[in-house]
Length: 58
Image (tube, rainbow, N blue to C red; front, top):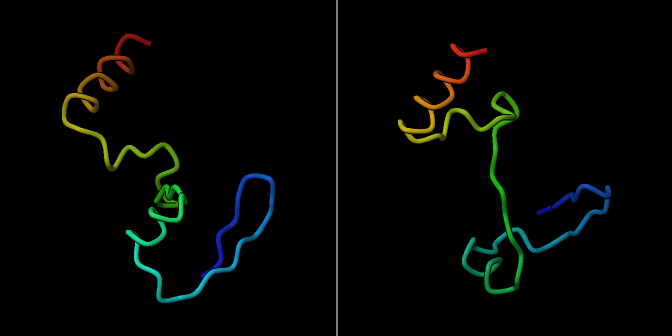
C-alpha cells in the first residue's frame, strides 16, 4: 500500500491494514474520484440545490 502526500512524499505500509487500523495509527484518508475532483458526486441534495442556485445566479 503506497500513500502519496501533496509534497510528493511516499509512505509504504502493509497491504493488509484495515481502514480502522490506519485511523488508529493517526492516518487521515481522503477518498476521491479522479473523474470528480470537486466531489460533486458525493454532495447532499441540499448542497446540490445550492450549487444549482449559484450557477443560475452567475
